[in-house]
Length: 47
Image (tube, rainbow, N blue to C red; front, top):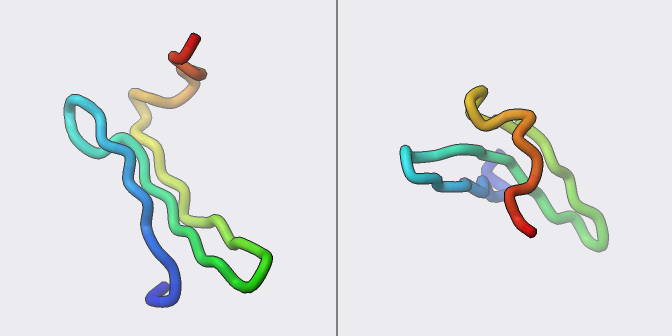
């Protein structure tokens, strides 16, 4: 996991989500997705 990056989403109460991303040429690997259970199934809050 030292060849990619972790992306964090911060909310009012701290970290809401985290995902691991690794780019390899023209492809990307997305894995280890974690979302705060209280924030799951809320959908997009954008209009």
